[in-house]
Length: 262
Image (cartoon, rainbow, N blue to C red; front, side, top):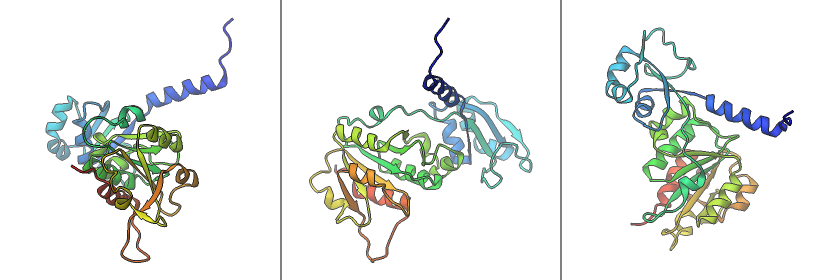
Protein backbone atom coordinates (compact mmCIF):
# COMPACT_ATOMS: atom_id res chain seq x y z
CA UNK A 1 0.00 0.00 0.00
CA UNK A 2 1.40 3.37 -1.05
CA UNK A 3 2.27 5.84 1.69
CA UNK A 4 -0.16 8.71 2.10
CA UNK A 5 1.21 12.02 0.79
CA UNK A 6 1.81 14.71 3.42
CA UNK A 7 -0.56 17.70 3.40
CA UNK A 8 2.15 20.13 2.23
CA UNK A 9 2.85 17.97 -0.84
CA UNK A 10 -0.84 17.79 -1.71
CA UNK A 11 -1.24 21.56 -1.31
CA UNK A 12 1.81 22.18 -3.50
CA UNK A 13 0.39 19.97 -6.25
CA UNK A 14 -2.99 21.70 -5.99
CA UNK A 15 -1.35 25.13 -6.24
CA UNK A 16 0.62 24.01 -9.30
CA UNK A 17 -2.53 22.75 -11.01
CA UNK A 18 -4.40 25.95 -10.17
CA UNK A 19 -1.59 28.07 -11.61
CA UNK A 20 -1.58 26.00 -14.80
CA UNK A 21 -5.33 26.55 -15.21
CA UNK A 22 -5.23 30.27 -14.44
CA UNK A 23 -6.18 32.68 -17.20
CA UNK A 24 -6.50 36.44 -17.48
CA UNK A 25 -8.76 38.56 -19.68
CA UNK A 26 -6.83 41.38 -21.35
CA UNK A 27 -8.80 44.23 -22.86
CA UNK A 28 -8.29 47.44 -24.78
CA UNK A 29 -6.78 47.85 -28.25
CA UNK A 30 -3.17 48.45 -27.15
CA UNK A 31 -3.07 45.65 -24.58
CA UNK A 32 -4.73 43.13 -26.90
CA UNK A 33 -2.63 44.08 -29.93
CA UNK A 34 0.65 43.69 -28.06
CA UNK A 35 -0.48 40.39 -26.51
CA UNK A 36 -1.38 39.09 -29.98
CA UNK A 37 2.08 40.05 -31.22
CA UNK A 38 3.90 38.51 -28.25
CA UNK A 39 5.12 34.99 -29.17
CA UNK A 40 5.58 34.19 -25.47
CA UNK A 41 1.90 34.76 -24.72
CA UNK A 42 -0.32 31.65 -24.61
CA UNK A 43 -3.59 32.93 -26.13
CA UNK A 44 -6.90 31.11 -25.76
CA UNK A 45 -9.87 33.16 -26.92
CA UNK A 46 -10.32 36.48 -28.74
CA UNK A 47 -13.59 38.45 -28.67
CA UNK A 48 -13.82 41.60 -30.78
CA UNK A 49 -16.35 43.88 -32.38
CA UNK A 50 -16.21 44.26 -36.14
CA UNK A 51 -14.59 47.67 -35.82
CA UNK A 52 -11.93 46.38 -33.41
CA UNK A 53 -11.28 43.40 -35.69
CA UNK A 54 -10.49 45.77 -38.53
CA UNK A 55 -8.15 47.83 -36.37
CA UNK A 56 -6.39 44.69 -35.08
CA UNK A 57 -6.38 42.84 -38.41
CA UNK A 58 -2.59 42.62 -38.79
CA UNK A 59 -2.05 41.48 -35.20
CA UNK A 60 -4.85 38.89 -35.48
CA UNK A 61 -3.31 37.51 -38.66
CA UNK A 62 0.13 37.40 -37.04
CA UNK A 63 -1.25 35.48 -34.05
CA UNK A 64 -3.12 33.05 -36.30
CA UNK A 65 -6.27 33.36 -34.21
CA UNK A 66 -9.88 33.14 -35.32
CA UNK A 67 -11.74 35.86 -33.42
CA UNK A 68 -15.32 35.76 -32.19
CA UNK A 69 -17.06 38.75 -33.76
CA UNK A 70 -19.75 40.21 -31.49
CA UNK A 71 -22.17 43.11 -31.54
CA UNK A 72 -20.76 46.22 -29.84
CA UNK A 73 -24.01 46.56 -27.86
CA UNK A 74 -23.75 43.03 -26.47
CA UNK A 75 -20.07 42.52 -25.74
CA UNK A 76 -19.93 39.00 -24.31
CA UNK A 77 -16.46 38.89 -22.74
CA UNK A 78 -16.61 38.34 -18.95
CA UNK A 79 -15.28 41.76 -17.99
CA UNK A 80 -16.19 44.27 -15.32
CA UNK A 81 -18.97 46.47 -16.78
CA UNK A 82 -16.79 49.53 -16.10
CA UNK A 83 -13.91 48.20 -18.20
CA UNK A 84 -13.03 50.40 -21.17
CA UNK A 85 -12.49 47.47 -23.53
CA UNK A 86 -12.68 49.37 -26.87
CA UNK A 87 -14.32 46.32 -28.40
CA UNK A 88 -11.42 43.92 -27.83
CA UNK A 89 -10.83 41.24 -25.18
CA UNK A 90 -8.34 38.38 -25.14
CA UNK A 91 -8.27 35.43 -22.76
CA UNK A 92 -4.70 34.30 -22.18
CA UNK A 93 -2.45 32.64 -19.66
CA UNK A 94 -0.23 34.82 -17.43
CA UNK A 95 3.30 35.34 -18.67
CA UNK A 96 6.18 33.40 -17.14
CA UNK A 97 9.33 35.52 -17.06
CA UNK A 98 11.36 33.00 -15.07
CA UNK A 99 13.04 33.67 -11.74
CA UNK A 100 14.96 36.61 -10.31
CA UNK A 101 18.35 35.22 -11.28
CA UNK A 102 17.29 34.66 -14.89
CA UNK A 103 15.96 38.21 -15.28
CA UNK A 104 18.33 40.27 -13.13
CA UNK A 105 21.81 38.73 -13.24
CA UNK A 106 24.11 41.52 -14.52
CA UNK A 107 25.56 40.94 -17.97
CA UNK A 108 28.29 42.74 -19.92
CA UNK A 109 27.13 46.09 -21.23
CA UNK A 110 24.87 48.71 -19.70
CA UNK A 111 24.61 48.40 -15.88
CA UNK A 112 21.17 47.00 -14.98
CA UNK A 113 18.39 48.75 -13.08
CA UNK A 114 15.62 46.92 -11.23
CA UNK A 115 12.45 48.25 -9.56
CA UNK A 116 11.06 46.51 -6.47
CA UNK A 117 7.55 47.25 -5.19
CA UNK A 118 6.71 46.81 -1.52
CA UNK A 119 2.96 46.13 -1.34
CA UNK A 120 1.98 48.39 -4.24
CA UNK A 121 -1.47 46.94 -4.96
CA UNK A 122 -3.12 49.43 -7.34
CA UNK A 123 -3.01 47.89 -10.86
CA UNK A 124 -3.05 51.32 -12.49
CA UNK A 125 0.07 52.35 -10.56
CA UNK A 126 1.85 49.09 -11.36
CA UNK A 127 0.88 49.38 -15.02
CA UNK A 128 2.31 52.90 -15.17
CA UNK A 129 5.49 51.71 -13.43
CA UNK A 130 5.89 48.98 -16.05
CA UNK A 131 5.65 51.63 -18.78
CA UNK A 132 8.31 53.80 -17.13
CA UNK A 133 10.52 50.78 -16.50
CA UNK A 134 10.37 49.86 -20.17
CA UNK A 135 11.18 53.42 -21.23
CA UNK A 136 14.22 53.59 -18.93
CA UNK A 137 15.40 50.07 -19.73
CA UNK A 138 14.91 48.34 -16.38
CA UNK A 139 15.75 44.65 -16.22
CA UNK A 140 12.59 43.84 -14.27
CA UNK A 141 9.87 45.05 -11.96
CA UNK A 142 9.62 42.84 -8.86
CA UNK A 143 6.64 42.66 -6.50
CA UNK A 144 5.36 40.25 -3.87
CA UNK A 145 2.85 37.49 -4.62
CA UNK A 146 0.63 38.71 -1.81
CA UNK A 147 -0.46 42.32 -1.23
CA UNK A 148 0.58 43.39 -4.74
CA UNK A 149 -1.18 43.82 -8.07
CA UNK A 150 -1.47 40.55 -10.02
CA UNK A 151 -1.48 40.40 -13.80
CA UNK A 152 -4.98 41.58 -14.76
CA UNK A 153 -6.70 43.28 -17.64
CA UNK A 154 -6.71 46.58 -15.77
CA UNK A 155 -2.96 46.37 -15.15
CA UNK A 156 -2.28 45.42 -18.77
CA UNK A 157 -4.38 48.33 -20.06
CA UNK A 158 -2.60 50.78 -17.75
CA UNK A 159 0.74 49.41 -18.96
CA UNK A 160 -0.35 50.10 -22.56
CA UNK A 161 1.52 47.11 -23.96
CA UNK A 162 4.56 47.24 -21.65
CA UNK A 163 3.35 44.14 -19.78
CA UNK A 164 4.24 42.07 -22.87
CA UNK A 165 7.82 43.34 -22.95
CA UNK A 166 8.80 44.39 -19.43
CA UNK A 167 9.48 41.48 -17.04
CA UNK A 168 7.10 41.57 -14.06
CA UNK A 169 8.11 39.08 -11.37
CA UNK A 170 6.18 38.28 -8.22
CA UNK A 171 8.20 36.73 -5.41
CA UNK A 172 7.21 35.15 -2.12
CA UNK A 173 9.50 37.26 0.05
CA UNK A 174 10.74 40.74 -0.88
CA UNK A 175 13.50 40.77 1.76
CA UNK A 176 14.86 37.52 0.33
CA UNK A 177 14.74 39.03 -3.18
CA UNK A 178 16.72 42.04 -1.94
CA UNK A 179 19.32 39.71 -0.42
CA UNK A 180 19.58 37.85 -3.72
CA UNK A 181 20.05 41.08 -5.68
CA UNK A 182 22.72 42.27 -3.24
CA UNK A 183 24.53 38.96 -3.72
CA UNK A 184 24.52 39.74 -7.47
CA UNK A 185 26.22 43.07 -6.75
CA UNK A 186 23.21 45.39 -6.73
CA UNK A 187 23.16 48.56 -4.68
CA UNK A 188 19.64 48.60 -3.21
CA UNK A 189 18.14 52.05 -2.59
CA UNK A 190 14.90 52.40 -0.65
CA UNK A 191 12.78 55.46 -1.45
CA UNK A 192 11.73 57.30 1.72
CA UNK A 193 10.70 60.94 2.06
CA UNK A 194 12.63 61.47 5.29
CA UNK A 195 15.96 60.26 3.87
CA UNK A 196 18.88 62.69 3.89
CA UNK A 197 20.44 61.79 0.54
CA UNK A 198 18.69 62.17 -2.80
CA UNK A 199 18.96 59.49 -5.48
CA UNK A 200 21.52 61.26 -7.65
CA UNK A 201 23.82 62.11 -4.74
CA UNK A 202 23.70 58.51 -3.49
CA UNK A 203 24.86 57.34 -6.92
CA UNK A 204 27.83 59.65 -7.35
CA UNK A 205 30.65 57.44 -8.68
CA UNK A 206 28.36 54.39 -8.47
CA UNK A 207 26.36 54.59 -11.70
CA UNK A 208 28.49 51.99 -13.41
CA UNK A 209 27.12 49.20 -11.19
CA UNK A 210 23.75 47.45 -10.81
CA UNK A 211 21.11 49.47 -8.94
CA UNK A 212 17.76 48.41 -7.51
CA UNK A 213 15.12 50.94 -6.44
CA UNK A 214 12.54 49.95 -3.82
CA UNK A 215 9.25 51.83 -3.59
CA UNK A 216 6.49 51.35 -1.06
CA UNK A 217 2.75 51.83 -1.20
CA UNK A 218 1.42 55.36 -0.95
CA UNK A 219 0.74 56.21 2.66
CA UNK A 220 2.59 53.50 4.61
CA UNK A 221 5.66 53.52 2.37
CA UNK A 222 8.35 50.91 2.92
CA UNK A 223 7.83 48.33 5.63
CA UNK A 224 10.40 48.26 8.49
CA UNK A 225 11.93 44.98 7.28
CA UNK A 226 12.36 46.40 3.77
CA UNK A 227 14.07 49.49 5.18
CA UNK A 228 16.48 47.29 7.12
CA UNK A 229 17.38 45.28 4.03
CA UNK A 230 18.09 48.28 1.77
CA UNK A 231 21.70 49.48 1.54
CA UNK A 232 20.52 53.04 2.11
CA UNK A 233 17.41 55.20 2.07
CA UNK A 234 17.17 57.97 -0.51
CA UNK A 235 14.64 60.61 -1.48
CA UNK A 236 13.40 62.57 -4.44
CA UNK A 237 14.03 66.21 -3.54
CA UNK A 238 10.95 68.44 -3.54
CA UNK A 239 10.81 72.21 -4.01
CA UNK A 240 8.31 72.64 -1.15
CA UNK A 241 7.96 71.16 2.31
CA UNK A 242 4.70 69.40 1.48
CA UNK A 243 5.44 68.07 -2.00
CA UNK A 244 4.84 64.38 -2.70
CA UNK A 245 4.48 62.17 -5.76
CA UNK A 246 2.20 59.34 -6.72
CA UNK A 247 4.19 56.07 -6.51
CA UNK A 248 4.18 55.59 -10.28
CA UNK A 249 5.46 59.13 -10.82
CA UNK A 250 8.08 58.59 -8.12
CA UNK A 251 9.24 55.44 -9.89
CA UNK A 252 9.65 57.31 -13.19
CA UNK A 253 11.62 60.16 -11.56
CA UNK A 254 13.80 57.73 -9.58
CA UNK A 255 14.55 55.65 -12.68
CA UNK A 256 15.59 58.79 -14.55
CA UNK A 257 17.74 59.95 -11.64
CA UNK A 258 19.36 56.51 -11.38
CA UNK A 259 19.95 56.07 -15.12
CA UNK A 260 23.25 54.52 -16.10
CA UNK A 261 25.84 56.71 -17.78
CA UNK A 262 26.96 56.16 -21.33
